[in-house]
Image 1 (tube, rainbow, N blue to C red):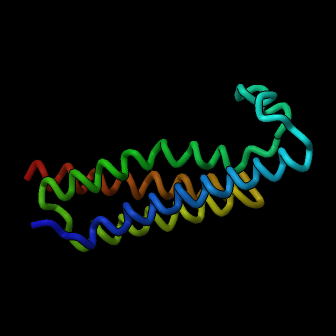
Image 2: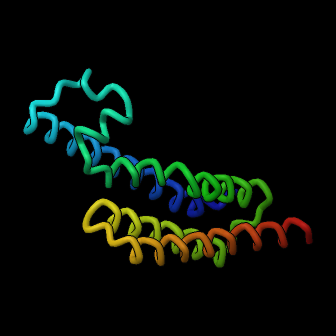
Length: 139
């Protein structure tokens, strides 16, 4: 049976990804207008970094396509193997909250060690999710 509540953390992470994308685009457009940067002059990532050094939002946007991919796969695997229980749901929400905090840090004041602790914790939560899924599947 499908536990529809289990898709909510995945939807929340997708929403975060779109919010960061909007933050990145609005920031870039504002910076391009303020500094009179022609779009063609930043056609490559090297040119973009040279002319627009504030890469916090774009770095975070890229991060949201790294370990979160394993999260999305875990959510689908949990549903496919009927393992979408309450503990796993709580861990899924904890992962999403940690990713939101990571994005807030990276897109704002960007203190590396603060960001690292949150990232490190989120990776351990994600690992816990996968260990639970693997153990449940093997049983």
